[in-house]
Length: 79
Image (cartoon, rainbow, N blue to C red; front, side):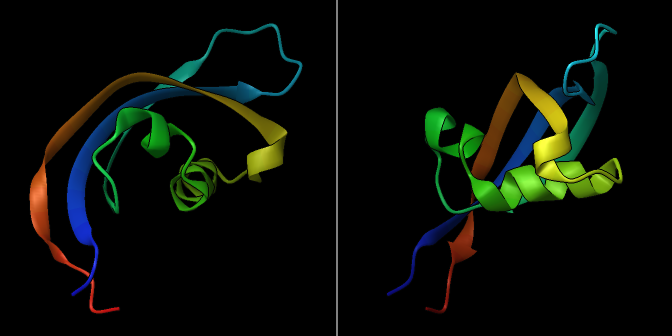
C-alpha cells in the first residue's frame, strides 16, 4: 500500500534573496504526499517546482506561503 496523494492549491510570494522589493505573488496547483501544512512548506520537491516556475534556483529566492488550500486525497502512490 502506497502513500496518499493530495491535491493542493498554494498562493505564494517570491523575491530574489537580499532584495528590498515586495514579494511577487503567484499561484500553483500541484500534488503532494502529505496534508500537514508545516510539512508542505518544507517539501523540497514543491520548493523546486515553485522556483522552476520563476526560472530561478531554490537557493536564489525567498518564498513565503500566503494560503494553502488542501483540496483532498486523489489516490495513492504505487511505491
